[in-house]
Length: 242
Image 1: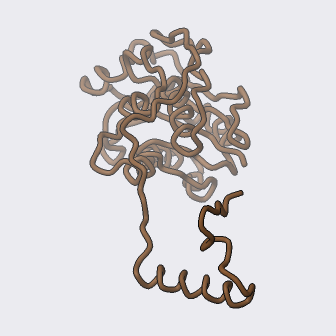
Image 2: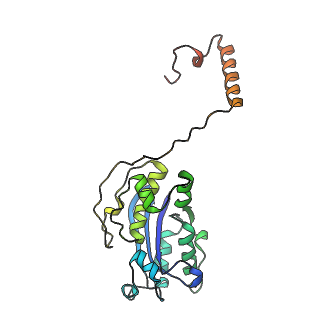
Image 3: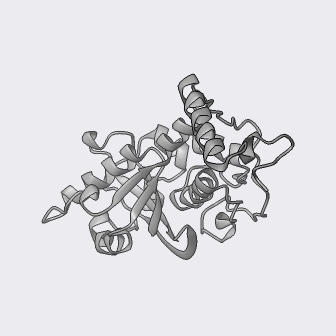
């Protein structure tokens, strides 16, 4: 299975207000293993960046002035993600911006949902940890993923961190050190492999109902009758797991 862990940075919060994507970062997983292939691109948004957004990601109009616009990289981006499952934290935000950019192309291009399936790790985290903080930073802490190099948000670095969190959250896999590689972004740090910290994780125990217990006893009665003696699960001192 081919999955693309994806993140974006933007000029603001609402594509309906004309805000644009300024950075795309993607990490490829194949059968839950990183392939080493990434897609990373800074973009000239052709508009001003909101000050609040700049405080989050640190990207300025001056830095982006000589970068390509989205339509110049659209083909390469679509070639990279087409047919994959996109793994995104708070997917509605990123997909909304990507669809807005695709709609601006001439001719307009089909939206993300017609090209890829989408898995929202924020929804997964809320199901696994209801009532708890489920930001990327909170999940990194919960699953023992080192995010010490994340002084500012960055699309590729955040995609690398999310890939580690996603693999740990869905399969118990230890940190892969994806973000140890040089990303070309300020703050990229040397990483080390560590075990997952499962402190605070709650094991849900589903107890049998009285009706289920009665049905179980009836099944054992039938085994007793068929075998002419108490079945293994009713013999004193027996261990049915052996």
